[in-house]
Amino acid sequence: MKHLLSIEQLSAREIQGLLESAAHLKLQRGRDGRQLAGQTWALIFTKSSTRTRVSFEVGIRELGGFPMFLSKNDIQLGRGEPIKDTARVLGRMVQGAIIRTYAQQDVTEFSEYSGVPTINALTDDEHPCQILADLLTVREKLGGWEGRKIAFVGDGFSNMTRSWMWAAKRLGFELAIASPASCQPPAAFLANLDAPNVSITADPQSAVRDAHVINTDVWLSMGQEDQKDKEFEFAGFEVNAGLLASAAPGHIVLHCLPAYRGKEISDEILELHADTIFQEAENRLHAQKAILVAIAR
Image (tube, rainbow, N blue to C red; front, side):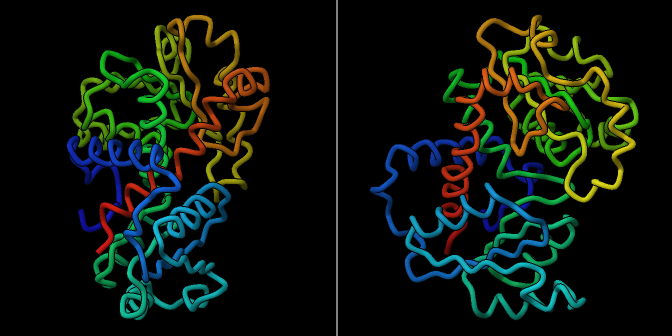
């Protein structure tokens, strides 16, 4: 692996390897090697963050490196400098880059022009770091995803659901996505995905029935705050006790956070599954350390 740009670009073997490494690094925390000793990694964020920024900064330091946080207001990107020019400058000064932004193409272009390992820390297209943390959590809580049904309730074509669909394609587990019709993946995407183990429905009860993992996220992604009129389309899509009544015994609930209680998830269910949800948040650190170790020079 030279970069981590998407789940789509990973093989099943690479995903499994990253999860094995993450589990090992979690057990060895505090006794890590110093794989990034003497290295400076740039964190280029044009979208705000809590979990992503903290987990990457802590992870880089625990591996012996130095994180350098750069918001769009700190560098010339905020004044319109082309991403390829920023990449060619930083590539001569830092050993790697972690980018959280809007366009997937910006991350791809940076990786091509910088010549340094590049990590997608979230774009509008994919959120690979979060999905790896989620899979690590499923493995810890349920022993794995083989023979399990995973449901996602919410926006059916968000960065989270795109990454979940590619993970299902690579790993072969059953994935049922419940989403309003206007938020479902287009036919061209599904044809390209070509994954018969992924189903799309407008019926949350059908998706959740017999599911071992129920996942959700905010209805409006970052940058869509001006589309609040869309929220009425998600009536009936709240993950609550009524919806979960038909889920498999011993099911777990995931949420990548931040959560809007009383919208995509009820306060009761979030608190009932808080141990899992905040374990999932912690696992961002371990999954991302595994990525850093895998692609560091």
